[in-house]
Structures are given as structure tokens and as C-alpha cells.
Image (tube, rainbow, N blue to C red; front, side, top):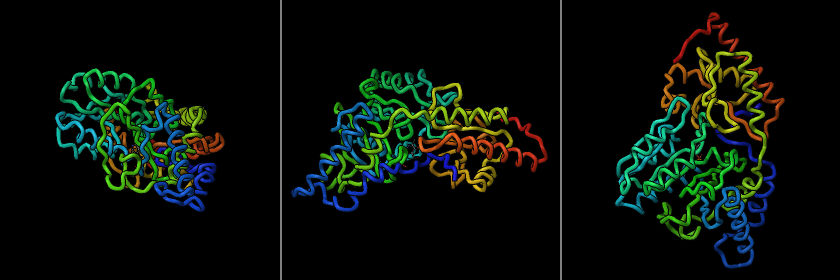
Length: 379
Ligand code: PLP
């Protein structure tokens, strides 16, 4: 299989598996216990905390380990609501992940959505206009979109929100490990990340919680994570997350993606790459082949041994409308002709070249079966 679905989840790095194995075998002690075997485990948890903090330009004690990106996002949003009951407004982007959209439904005050433009970028003037000093508690924005890879101008968003007295949460689940994130330069208040998007296993995430802000935990109980997230720590997962964070360096993912895109555009010039004129992640290609049914393409590509997604990331099994492409102003036909290919440092150029050939062949096959015409104009 040629795996081009790393925005859905990444293969676990063999070095990460090696790092976590001792904590599944001999180092199984509960880190809260008092004997020396537990102290050793506690130390490993602390090392992982430092590794994750280093990746973000944060302090180790600002990192709270969670079970996934979804938990981190829910925690950040619920914490702000509980800590600032006098402020009623939550502002989110129009192209947020379901974790934010659903968590926002539980917000007891007013939820306001900021539109994006055709490139998927938040309209900063609209954001300024929607902020209400004294009323807006939180602005929660995707740092990089999971369907298109489009990168939000987080520094500007943070400045604008802070100037109005609002806190900022970034869903950086797709961004972490793919682009530089330095919280000394972009002083956001909460950041969510998830290990399985950068070669750690599933079931481990983290919430960055700035030292500057009040916090109300979502999970209460035994008081682990300094009272910020109760529940016995997933030590193997935490160690894996730390190791994976330490392995994130500047792999040239853009070279793979660009080569892949150039091959497709050369053979199918009417293809449309979303966000192509915009800063976007180096590892995601969201591409529309006008007139081609993405669901049918997925079947052909699966037969050819290529794993990729139609539209949205985590749940393309249930093919549904893409609220992201819709928010960018594309119609349903356009979305139904869109595929997402996402790369990781474990892919090779040989793989992406072979995948591009398979995609081109599949598009031609579908067109010939439809009677030749590719002239379905969308938008
Ligand atoms: N946010 C974004 C942008 C995502 O892509 C995902 C997962 O696909 C999540 C949040 C949820 O992360 P997790 O699967 O760790 O709960």
C-alpha cells in the first residue's frame, strides 16, 4: 500500500515504538506511587513533557497530557466557559474541525462564526468587528485546516483577540510537527495537539495551557497532571508523544507534495488545488478533479493500492458534504470531486510518483467510462 492519508493518522515511527515498549513491559509502575520504580516512570513522564514543550517553545509545566486532540479542544473550551462566566461570547472559524464545532454547541453563551475567503483564510476585519471587549471570552481557530492544509495567520489573530481582551485557543492538531510553532513569538493561551498526527500512536494528546490563564479541568478525580487532568497517566503514550516530538524536525515534505502536484497538474491541467495561493501545510494536497466522482476514485485508488481520502479527514467512511469547501464558496459538485492526499516523512518520492501515475490513470478511466467529457464546470 502507498499510504497518502497522514492527515487522518500517521504510521507510528519505529523509533517511537522502541521508546514506548519498556513502559509497556517492565516500567509499568503507576507514576503516582512512592517506590523507586515509580520515580523512574515519573521521570520519563517529565522528560516527555519537556520534549513536547521544546517543540512548541513553551514551558514544560504548561503541558497537560490528554487522551487526544478532541479531549484537549473540549477541555480548553469548557475551561474558559467555567473560568470566565461573565463573558458570554465564543468566536470560532467557519472551517473548524468537528471537535470544535461540537464542543461549541455546549457553550452556554453566544457562539459566533467568522467566515473564510475563497482561499480558506479567516477574514481578519470580520474578526475585529465580531469581537466585543468585555463580552468575548475566547477565539478558537484551527491553526492549519485538516482538509485543505491552509494555515491561519495565528500571530495576527492572537494580537487582534488579545487587544479585545479575549483569550485564544489554537487547534494545532494538523500543524504541530509540520510547521514551526514558537509560542514565544505567538503567545496563544491554549493549544491542542494529538500524537497520532505526528508518528506517535493514537490515544495520546496534549493541551498547552499558558501560565497566564486561569484553568478549570474537564476531568476531575485523583488530581494527576497537577490537578489539571485526572486519570492515571497513559505512560507508554506519553513517552511516545515525547519521543515523536523530539523527532519532528525540518523534513522536506513540501518537495514530495510539490512533485506530486506538478505531475497531476501536468496531466490533468483543469485540476484545482485548494489554497494553492495561500500559506498551507507542506504535507496536504486537496485537489478537485472537475466532473470526477471522488467516491468512485477512492475505490479505484484503493484497488491500485493507494490510501487517500475524499474530502474530510477523519470520517471519510461516511462521505458527507464538506463544510470546509462550502465555507470557501465551492458548491457540492466541486466538493464531491475533491480528494485529499497527505504525506509524511515516511513517504518516498518513488511512492508519490507511482501514486500520481495511479491517480492520473484513474481519472482517465473514469472519464472514458463517462463518455469522455471533462467539461463539468464547477464554480
Ligand atoms: N483537530 C483537527 C484539525 C484534526 O484533524 C483532528 C483529527 O483528525 C482533531 C482535531 C481530533 O484529534 P483526535 O483524533 O486526536 O481526537
